[in-house]
Image (cartoon, rainbow, N blue to C red; front, side):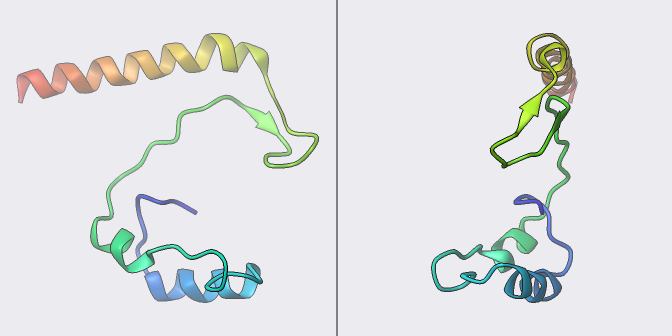
Length: 85
């Protein structure tokens, strides 16, 4: 699920209601607003296992070496593009 891009808010809402017991009661997401401002998203982060679990872990090389360099490179490219635009 992305908080930056939704193509069909109704389908997402239906899926959330079926998979999140407290969706709408204790937790909600402004799906219609997200759909209105939908924008491309690139998720850059370290490789890992068992996300959001007690056993969650990441590859140290990715966390401390690769990911920071990829982020720096991506941001540098965007800033350079911004200056040339």
